[in-house]
Length: 64
View 1 (cartoon, rainbow, N blue to C red):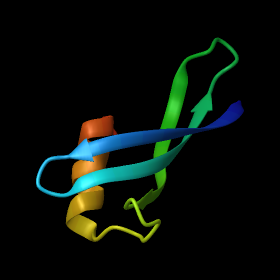
View 2 (cartoon, rainbow, N blue to C red; view 1 turned 135 degrees about the horizontal axis):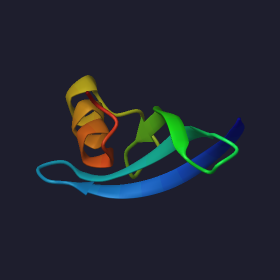
View 3 (cartoon, rainbow, N blue to C red; view 1 turned 90 degrees about the vertical axis):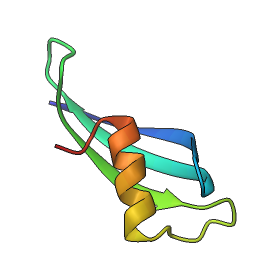
View 4 (cartoon, rainbow, N blue to C red; view 1 turned 90 degrees about the horizontal axis):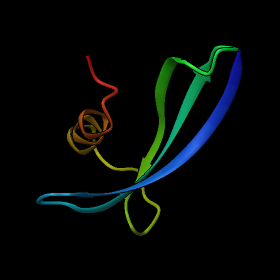
């Protein structure tokens, strides 16, 4: 398993820009086996509230 972090900048309707860092674990075949949203902050680097974080998770396809 390999670990990689990726930064995403999203435009959340009704809120604004949100910068997210995700963690992905990949198999030796290159398939992603697990993803997790580590951080979600606004344009001033303040953590976003739970509802905005949930919207970011949904946009990134992490929420089940």
